[in-house]
Amino acid sequence: MINIKSTSEISKMRAAGKVVFGTFKELEKHIKPGITTKQLDKIAHDYICAQGAEPSFLGYAGYPASICASINDTVIHGIPDDTALKDGDIISLDIGAVIDGYHGDAARTYPVGKISDEAQRLIDVTKQSFFEGLKFARHNERLFSISATIQDYIESNGYSIVRNYCGHGIGKKLHEDPEIPNHGIFGRGVRLCKGMTIAVEPMVNAGGFETKCLSDGWTVKTKDGSLACHYENTILITDGEPELLTLIE
Image (cartoon, rainbow, N blue to C red):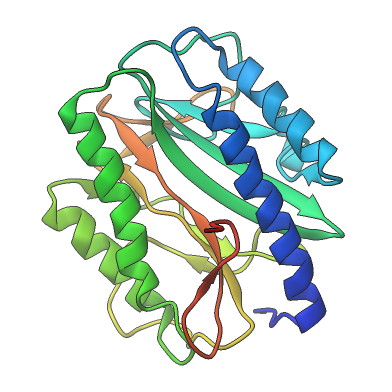
């Protein structure tokens, strides 16, 4: 069942989204060669809690950290540890925060030091694919029009879209209906309507779309070892332009 949010619920989600946005801004100060993903996790955890929120991910289905930190060929769900970032790496950070019982969820991919032109292009294309899909995140549009637009943009740029992980509805639960794949047929899927809140998150591989999950049950890597990138925001469907709850200008 897809939950339509009330004005009060939307207000709480805006507050959670603001915390997520602020967490990224705090982490951006520290993303440089030598810092470990565990240190980034602590910075994020402390910041989220200082805002009167809680990390959405910590303990979720047994997940052991407050953020996901995925380096280079790790697509999603990288568990923070003592791995130090190196010059030339790219790192995808996925962050969720819950405040007053409602969640915000977003992801970004960052360069570490000086990265290759190809790695930067992957970051740029992945981010832009989200905004291409966002054009169809409107009242009365079909859900898979977002999905198909993302897929078309990614594949037209020579990359592949991950098939076996997807975006999702969000609100009182971190993951709600509907599932939102990053591939599909334009004009299909449920009809979007005002008050829906969704998390759209392109996951893009420089090589093939196949992935593998490591023995920890969380870490997802590209099967061919190619670079991967992730970009996500929580979106409110309105009767006009969509509102990005986790991207505050």
